[in-house]
Each structure stands twice: as C-alpha cells, then as structure tokens.
Image 1 (cartoon, helix red, strand yellow):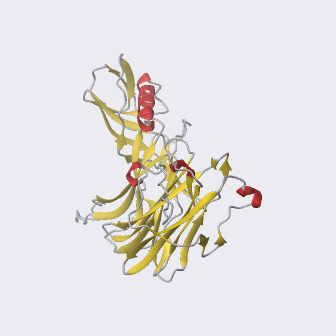
Image 2 (spheres, helix red, strand yellow):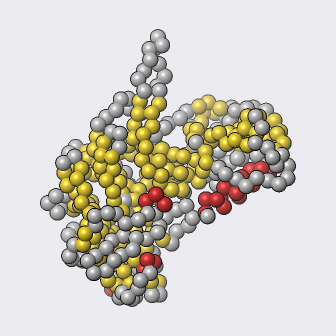
Image 3 (spheres, one colour):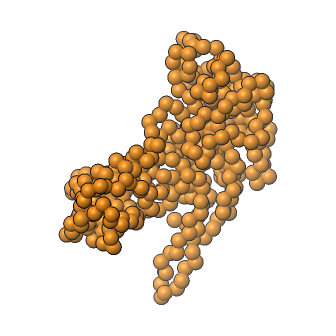
Length: 371
C-alpha cells in the first residue's frame, strides 16, 4: 500500500457495439446496467481489415465461416488523454437482413495512437449456430477521469453466459511514457460498479504522531458469495502501472493465521413467515462459544459486514476475482456474516451454521440478483 497521492494518467477501455454509415448496429444488452448504451461521437470508417493482422478471419479453416451472410461495420472513437490522442476502433458483424440486436457481434477491437499504429489489439472467433451467431461479443470505451489521473476505461461482455457473469473490464494507462494494459481483463461473479476513491487513516507510526490520510483510485465490484453480495475494491497503482487488490489483511484465529478481509454487504432477503434461529458468535472465530438467537417474523435484522477470503487469480489472458469458501474445519479462513437481530449482535459462520435463516437468506438474495 503506498502512501500519499501519486499523479498519473490512466486509460481504460470498455467493449461496445459498432455502427456504420449504412447500417446501424444496435449495442448488445450484455454489459452491466451502468455501462449499457452506445458511446457518443462514433463515426464510421471505411474498410474492414485489421491494420495489424490483415483481414479478420476466425481461427481454423474456411469451414468455420459456414453460416449466413454478414454485413461488416467499423466504428471509431477518439480520446484525448494528457495531450495525446488515441482511437478506439471496433469491427462488428451483423447478420445480413436482420433487424434484431441479437444478430450483432464484435469480432475485433484495438487502440491506435495518433499515427494510426495499433498499440493493442484484441479479436474474437466468430461461429454460427443455425442462422445466428454462436456467441456474441460487445465492447465500449469511455474517457476516465479519477482523483489521481485520467485515461480510458474499457469494459466488455459476451452472450450466452450464466447469470452474474459474461463481462470483464480492462484498464490501459501510461507507464514509462507508453500506453499499456495495467492488467488482463478482470471479471468476477457479479458486476462492475465503476470507479471511486477510497481514503483511510493509517495507524500512527510512533509516539502518537498522526499520519496524514491516504487515498487511492479504485475500481468497485459487486461479488456474489452464494448467500449475499459484497462490495470489492481493486486499487489502481499509478507508479507500477498495475491493478491489484485494494486491501491485504492478516489475523490470528483459533484455527491459525488467516487472511480474510471485511467487506460491505448487500442483502435484501424475503422475510420468513415463521420463527427461525441463528447461532451467533461474538467474533468471526469458531473458537468462541455461540449463542442461539430466535428470529421472529417481525424481528429487526441488520446486515453489518462480512469477512471472507477473496482470491485474485492472475492468468495470461484473464484476471479473476472469486470468493473462497473453505469448508475444511481445520482452516482459519471461512465466510462470516455480521448481523444484528433486535439489538443482539454477532457473526454467522456460513460453514458451521445450518440455520434455516441462512437458507432463506441465500435463496432470497439469489432471486433478487437474477431478476
């Protein structure tokens, strides 16, 4: 965790659909709600060939192209970041004669500098299922201005996909004077909420000397845990040109060292019509003796926070954020939920507790997330 505020420049790219002078391409409704919609200022550009890889063709032989005829469109959007100009160029295919937004897919996009040279290129294979595409991709890009810098945010998505998935975000910024991706595409079982600034007060160093508050730019995500959602932050490191978890936590439990952090909770379950109960621990630690608390249908229930380990998996082509639920009783890291029932405060272990209340919470929140 760095101290102080570092000025930087960031470029973030988001995946959208394209449009042309002759054929309007409707954006695919596959991105998080906050990101849907076509970018403004798009203009058509002649030509359908990638300047880097030549004519766009999916991997494999010519048989991969067996399917309906398509109309190809190239769109372009310009961004001015720290006095430098970059173009987000996107190539889309549309089923000829179709007016359905389901019959459009993006097969490649790239970032170009002011000279027209591609500094980053990404493409997707095109396949057909009957008279439509087997998979549809979408992409949008927007200018990003944060507390510490400015750039472009990139976000993408694909269909078909399972609920709460099928999307990603990728950040591009300046490092050593050149534009580069700060990470591979980031995704999780939830959705991207946008950028924010987080500030915290460090512990005094010595002799009670007060340390100045520290703030940093973050990307905010909503992650589904299987029973409720948490809000997760990824910090933008302007010095190293990377994106990494905003918080690293360590604690000692009765089961040994743990690495779980605490997160804000989002839960809105349907209330039970009958009485149920929970086993509340005074701390998120199974070494403490729990107390049984009866929950009446009219009880006041508050969801305060959650504690759990969240993985940050780096791979060559993707970065995945995921909640780890270790049901091995010998491990220290588990998923805990901090609640207050009619003024009685405590923690529920999602592994230890088999309360009907927990089953109700999981079912109700999951239904809300999918509707």
